Structure formats: structure tokens, C-alpha cells
Amino acid sequence: MEQQFVIRQAAAQDAAALLEIYRPFITDTVVTFEYEVPAAAEFAARITDTLAFFPYLVCERDGKPVGYAYAHHIRERAAYDWAVELSIYLAPEAQGQGVGTVLYQCLIDLLGQQNIRILYGCVTLPNEGSRRLHEKLGFALTGVWHGSGWKFGQWHDVGWFEKRLGGDGPAQPVVAFPALEPKKIQECLCRYTAMLKDGGLN
Image (cartoon, rainbow, N blue to C red):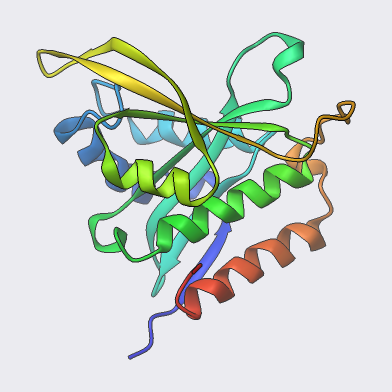
């Protein structure tokens, strides 16, 4: 039977399902430096807070969320308004199948519509899968924070991957995600949903 994929905007009601994807990354890995699994209400608030300015996307397969991706400001100063950090998490059954590549690229395209210029991926090292994902989509490793995170009784290095959108011309005002034209958002979501149905990005 053909798998049915959908990439869509997340909602607070997705919190419980997305938290189940995120949970093992907290309890079993150093992919995230979060120590405690947040309550569903707190996670729902995170989704809502993110959507007030940035995309928060969900990928469903046969009606079940199997991954999500979002962006957030990397610094508070106004001069950093054009720089964001991206995050993506996939359920085990969706890993290694191109789902992450398509979902991440969809997020990147929407951020481009917002006039975001600099993208960062923060990766606990080593993480070969995440490194390949970022490099495939044009990110370059720009630096390593050595021993910057303590989890599971060890210090861990963090690599910062960077991708630039557009040229070096003057900055254009950043457009909040809710202010983007809904038709253009939907066209983007549909385009990448179609890519998943066709086997993903080459």
C-alpha cells in the first residue's frame, strides 16, 4: 500500500504526539541537552510561541506524525533578527528515508519567504546523520564548541553548521510567519508533500 505523506503547520493539539517523538532524544541521547521531558502543556506552549513568528512544521505518514521541524531566534539583539537556529526530530521509523531532508528544506524555503538570511544547525558531535543532512542542504561546519554540554556524565562537543540565503545586499524587513500570504505557505507545503510522495529530494 502506498504511504500517504502530508507536511503541514503544527498546532498546539499536536503536542502529545510530537512529544512522543522528542521523548527518546531526551532520555536516551545527547542530540538534545534537555534533561527532563516537558509536560504536554509546556510543549504545546512552545509550539504556540514558535508559531507567533516562525514556521513549526509536522510531517505525517498515514495520518501519524513521524517528524517535526521549526526555527527560533539565535540571539535577542535586533541585529540578529535575520539569523535563526533550526531544529528537526524524526521518529525511528522515518529516519534514513529522506523525510528529514524534505521537511528541513520545506522549513528553509518558508524562512526564505520571511527574508531570513542566516541559518544555523546546532549538532552534538559526533552525529554523522545530522552532519550529512546539513551538508546535503548546503550548510558548512563553521566551528565547534568543545566540551560545552554536560549530559549522561560526560562533556560533549557541539558543532555549528551555517547556511546563507540570498546575497550580501541590504537587509530586508523580516516578515513574521503569520503575516506571510497563506496561499504561498500552502503552495510550499504541498510542493514538499509531493516530493515525499515521489521519493524525496535527490
